[in-house]
Length: 200
Image 1 (cartoon, rainbow, N blue to C red):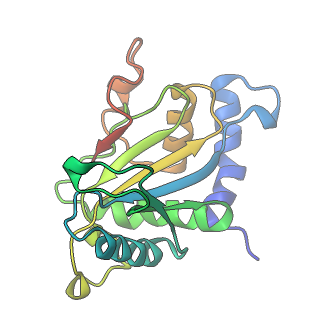
Image 2 (cartoon, rainbow, N blue to C red; image 1 turned 90 degrees about the vertical axis):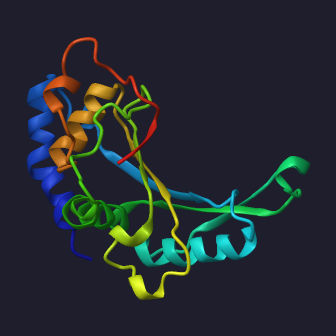
């Protein structure tokens, strides 16, 4: 199987650039993208089971991989929630599928976001992982708008092996993540100040 173009770019360009920027002496010290987690919670939907089925179908189209279903662990009367009821869907992408999804996200999907000004560079968790929220699935080219049953939002979590937010941010930026206000984000004392999942 051929190496995805973005993975080859990481090996050829990103690794040398990050070694120079951070002074790594060993290639294994260079952070990498480990996985991308795509989740959708349908807990507020009045017809949760059908809503979760729709989320599963949409995530499968978007990622090319069938997600697993998450279930409630206890009953909550105020939310009319029963123990064991389906709440959402989640898929974890690794390897070639991860690289291909990331490539499509930065080059095709993100630019489709209305009034898009870039991904927040502050949405890191302190360990080099970035998260962003997508309000609905219509920005993904795999979705046929005339077949949409309901609008479904997603959280995308980009998990890296970076030790710090600065290293994780530099890695994703080198890979092409369209961050906004990078100069402000890299200023001293400007580490993660926003919640992990910021909506773009």
